[in-house]
Length: 458
Image 1 (cartoon, rainbow, N blue to C red):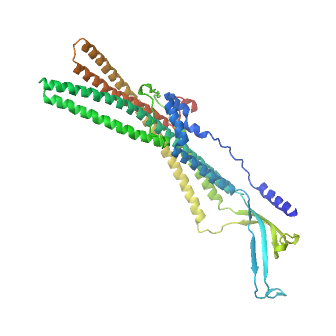
Image 2 (cartoon, rainbow, N blue to C red; image 1 turned 180 degrees about the horizontal axis):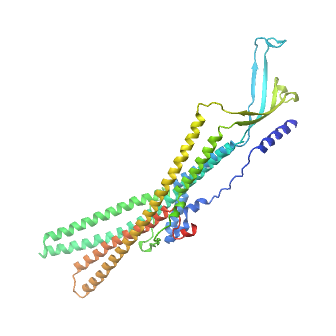
Image 3 (tube, rainbow, N blue to C red; image 1 turned 30 degrees about the vertical axis):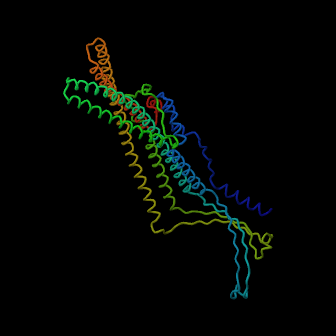
């Protein structure tokens, strides 16, 4: 009982002199905030939201990012463990065989042999007088936060890529449907021109031109179909489900346009993961510099040991074999060949590099935000222009159809007017989807925030 009291007293003594830090309770749902479903609901597409949730559950890149965060958290726990007392057991047995005489002053010990059994519990604790170990743990914690920003960047990039790919699929479905109608109309035109040619009402060159146009339409159709297959496979990879070989999309006519602001304040870059990461990196290197400076100061190691030391195994737990010790060991490095100075200088240079990275990130962030916003405005103007042109072509076609009904226009000319409507619609479809994707890129550029409510968050 006496032994256990001594062990308990030693443990309490060491625990009282070491810092104890409360473990931060992690929110297990923080990755859903990265997904930002509330923003994607602005596009009013349940299928898109469903795919985003599937990617959240299955995508391998997101799982890898989550594992990286967990690994970093374990490294932080290892660093924290260095601030706490260490308790260990290292038993030992050795035997001295016959040896030469041993003399202790006037006492002579003749040749002898004996066994020695040692069973000690050892506690050690490095007294963190200068806070060096605490600084190292803070540095590791900042590294964990940096990796979390990498994870957030992965979520923003993946969800934006998935949404863009999804809308490209909608665009291709519409273009394929449009092109199939163009091919059917052109085939009908070729048959009509062939009749004209056989009746001597047109030259062969006209027939050849129509046949050539048909092959062009057919080639474009195959390109669209092939592109659709490629984008579908890309979508399957993003969803992370190799058992799913088909992707469902909403109809083009249901695509909702999200308005973009005329301008966005420069302060929005503070929400970007790369900006947050460089800020954390400056803080981390600052801790590293402080820790390197304090590495020059003396260190004090507290230690204690309790256990048994006996020469006969049967007596190992006897009262006369109990052994205990406690003490402290101050130490200071007088000469390390310049290693500590080099480490300090390295960390100072790393801090300077981190500051330059921060300045560069500000510039590139502003560039990406302005570029994405400018492209979005351009695509919006192009879409409006192509929509106006498309509506004009439809009006012209409606007039052509009325003329066909009263016999003022031939069926061949009416079909060609219909083709012009479809060709104009292709531009309208392309520009509309390009604008939708541009709004997604603006969302990505400002760090995955809703730019319509960004002012409330600044």
